[in-house]
Length: 156
Image 1 (cartoon, rainbow, N blue to C red):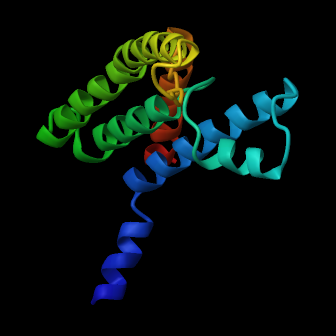
Image 2 (cartoon, rainbow, N blue to C red):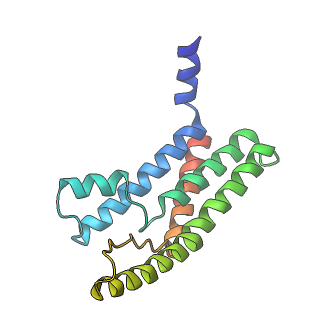
Image 3 (cartoon, rainbow, N blue to C red):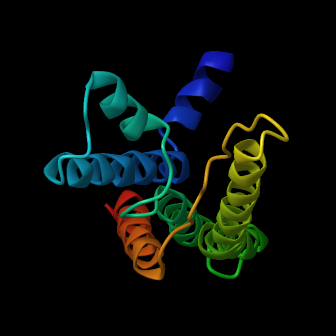
């Protein structure tokens, strides 16, 4: 019984579209960085492919849009779960553009203060990671990718 449930979970078009859209966005992002010569070694390549966020296209936006599209096709556009997935997508997309950018600006300011205090020998300072968030185009392309993949997994 448990094996059958696991099997149905693994062939679920909603799950498949979400995972495949995230992987596709990360792969495209990695290829773009390779073409720009920004990948220095295998460790950097693996980190970019699986862990790093930011860049073109937004993998978070791709995932949540694929999720919403495939839920819409499979459960109906009038279902509660579709509305929930759309709200979830909006929160994630808003976070990708706005909140992460704001925290990156805050980190930049704290880094400037920390470096100044370190130069004055007041305290030792380790810089914070400055996250810049996504540009609107990166989020838009991620959304298009997710909508396309979510639709494809549901219709085909």
